[in-house]
Amino acid sequence: MGYWLFKSEPDTWGWPDQVARGAAGEEWHGVRNYQARNNMRAMKLGDQGFFYHSNIGKEIVGIVEVSRESQPDSTTDDLRWDCVCLRAVRPLLRPVTLEVCKVQLGLEQMVLIHNSRLSVQPVTAQEWQIICDLGGLG
DNA sequence: GCCAACGTTGGC
DNA sequence: GCCAACGTTGGC
Image: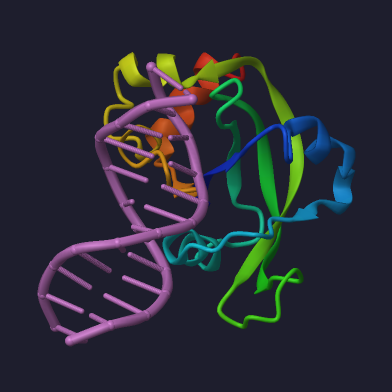
């Protein structure tokens, strides 16, 4: 089971938008960064991800699941870009802020902290567990 | 709104 | 293939 983190500006596509898609999920289109794309190519059906609000909130608010493995991005004809589909699983009972992640023991190596610009990031199993605990999903 | 960090582009 | 210029992202 792989663990990931997806960033989105809530102004553009927020957690409520993701939830509104229900079980059908939504294509995580628009990524135009090779590293982020490669991360999506590595994802398997059922992999779990955190849904992070950048700029506004700066916090992890929910859990999503890969509901379709990577396929061509429908928003471009450029064959370089493809993406997975995500469906909302459940919200964190308490959002986990970037501020908290920065000082939390065990999260020192999080990509979110060291490469905040990468929009699709890997998360380790240990980091996943710590954040779930902090979010009230122990 | 500013700016640092990072990725991409294009001239050489 | 190097690197300067430029654009974008996202925290502050």
